[in-house]
Image (tube, rainbow, N blue to C red):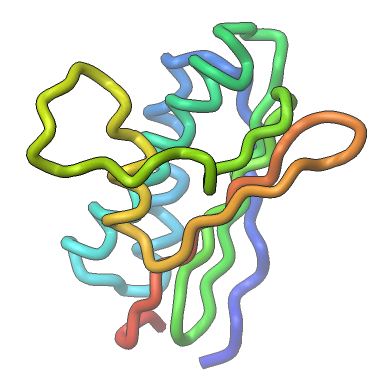
Length: 140
């Protein structure tokens, strides 16, 4: 099957918009006939990433916007988030011990566990591009 187009959704940086963004990502997964477990992993990772952007990058500024881009091909689904926050280096976030007891701080841990690739690069003059990829042999 040929690659699908890159789909995009722009939302205000508000926690109440997480439901809309998750529904968008779920719809993209459904167009590729992904199994429920893979779909759930992608939705959960996206929700964690968006929550981190809203709380930390945008510091609860609803005037900031987040663009959610999804692209599926026959081997993978890519979710990219473009934010308007300060530069962020996901590689500086320590790899946590899953048995460590703590409140919060599990968003990047979950993204790393649920997705096959996770990267973040700064955008000029401001913002970041967070990219997550889930390889899925039965996509399409």
